[in-house]
Length: 276
Image 1: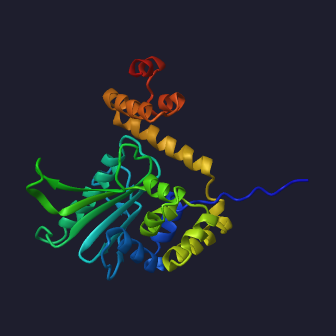
Image 2: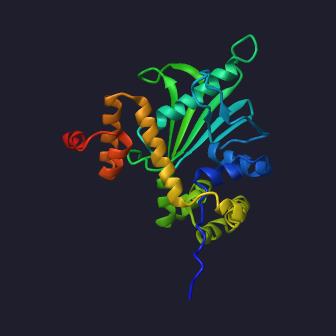
Image 3: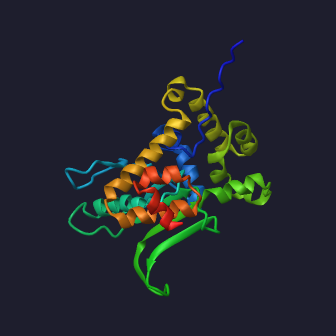
């Protein structure tokens, strides 16, 4: 007797489902409520911006960000980071400042009206002890701000998950909008009880997972291989041995498999042994 293999349930933290829901103008109300909870401020209206950024270099491939919107005189750039590779902050900062640069070039004067906010929803932040870290451009003692219209927020998504698994009711209620991204459908139903926003998100994510076209797009294993291939390509493109060594050190510190480190960095076994 053969049994039908149960379909993979794609959590909202993955790139495709995140974009399908929060990057879709059809669900503008969901995005608006989500950003209100994240930023703890009223969102009046949202304009979706092009997520493919111009590179300014004919030989460089276009850069595609997860989410880019304009609202309340703010440009908000969002990245959902399932992994935490060593180049993560540098890559996301490049995307963020690319948008700042393109926005300020519109018209004849520098645009001082807009506030630019970059938001990272990051997993595997082992060094972070806070649910959110906020960064601005200030001097060493924080007494002066170089630019007061730029902010970077990074949320520790694993810490949000810990509230759920530790049954921390106070923080579960406070951070439902973060916890929901890494839960299976049964836990999502429990989390959404009494919360219309989480309930609608759960319904839409479930519909997406029940869509055969979406399910046939990619398996979890294929997604992980694509991430591995991307890290490997970015490591090679860096082209500097020092950068590869820094990547290897980072991967060793978080306990990554030696085979993966060798494949991503292109270093030899002897190189890796010298770092241990």
